Length: 183
Image (cartoon, rainbow, N blue to C red; front, side):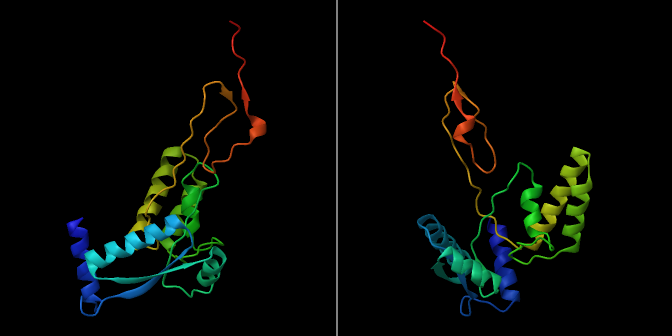
């Protein structure tokens, strides 16, 4: 971590930012207690480690989306939940021609790896291509991944029809209880 912070400080200095003349920007996020706590924590860490001054702005989700769409925002908080259990559902979000590529990320190499991965039928080769695409994107830093959503469920063994899925949606009509053996 110390090396990463030193590198960040060096890059900021090369861009003309110092403790006396800090980088200043606004971090905009949708309202919510968890989002506010995370924004305060992140801004504090940036300030402590880099001297960066991030002002925080909590806005309603619709307003945030309008600001992002107009590109009237410095930095914004957003999340993505995949619709199916495959890395492509997350990686396609940053494909340059994907309709909701909100960061407006564009990389010919990334797009090519995703296209090749989508056509690949060999699971191992497909995984390798998608991992390469992820490395390309992470090196370019169009997003700052902070955390992953986690769902926890306590499910009785007698419950039939329960299944974990990336959308965390299970319909009650699909659930039933196994009959208990007579005593």
